[in-house]
Image 1: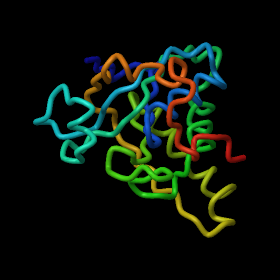
Image 2 (image 1 turned 90 degrees about the vertical axis):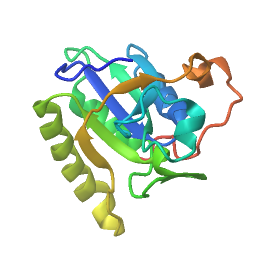
Image 3 (image 1 turned 45 degrees about the horizontal axis):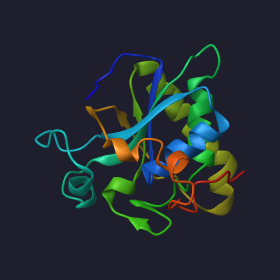
Image 4 (image 1 turned 120 degrees about the vertical axis):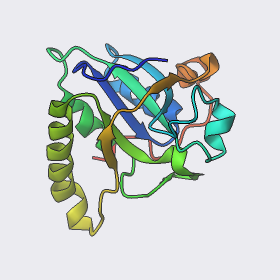
Length: 173
């Protein structure tokens, strides 16, 4: 478990199955240190398992936690990449994956991250979704307690290149 509130070099994003979310960040930003896990769920549920999260009863999101060097990649760049690599207009769904654990979320660690996330979201909405008549439904909230997923989920698609990957995890523009 790690709770890194207040650190501006941690980013937390949920965009469907965490395997694909982690994989697409690592593909374009190999210098990042990532881990997959669960965040922003019920406070009375601690250290949830994959099976519990998939039940839909924990309210946890499958997410990726990113440690980054702000002098090499900005938080705003990571937020934009997050939007480019999934469908932020579907509530609790990415491709065939459905449930609250597959929601689109930006979980901020500082007030500055919150402001940047809102500004980037507004810009991306205007540039890429308003013209198509679509609305971003991504939740933007302070990051809750983080729980690492089980070891076999970490870098899953690197270790299992033929593993399932949601078709929405690709560059959309």
